[in-house]
Image (cartoon, rainbow, N blue to C red; front, side, top):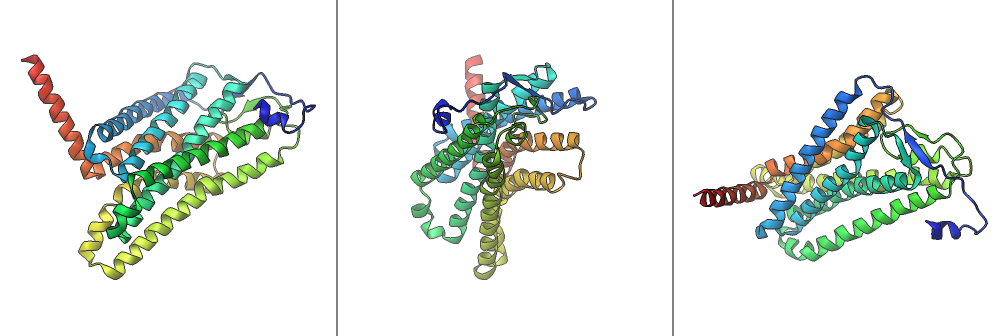
Length: 323
């Protein structure tokens, strides 16, 4: 960050607070019950995503391009919830709302990077389904393991660079207002509004990034499934169409779980109470990582078969040991 600021001019000094005070859940009655629920969601998320990653890693039959994306989604969900939930519990449940300046920016970086990657993973899975259904004969050529690895790596690089730019622009802000952040984490929008110098570049990013990380991925996914639906309606029988579309159910559920709460929350942003908005946004951050592994285990036959196989092997080995 020092290199970033030196590029702006050696004689520029920025006023940074020693710490930020996160106040998002303050004043919400009986909020400790919500934190117990949040802890439950986190535990289920850790167990579920770890199980999905373990099954894909241990079963050599699940090494296709699709499962590379599923593995990465489980990793992002596990990493994102682990970056967010323990810190939120520490801040509000154990009453440690003061976060040092650099720690707050690190918190912001990890949370936003994982949120971006959740969206990009759904794009990768949508592309996989699009090629598998529309060009089944070319699927092995167009969507290879290397292609999916490069695509996921490109998404990671783009998300990391984009979020680093946002963090770098925050470091050039002088924070003159009291350093109270009315959110449940170190929110970019809440922080840049505390500055007393020009924060127009931060404002531009706050308008641009939702388009890049939310609207464009959602548009690509919806257009992909519109194209799939139109193609199946023209060339397939009803039975064949339903059979092909059945392979998309798991992914469509993930898309609904991730995008619909965000759409509802941001559409009604100005009409709901700030406390309700914070609760809604926090739920949209932690719920998809909990539900994603459940959806994939229940909706993907290969993962269910692999999980049963691994559990049977584990059960037999335990019997042998006890004998």
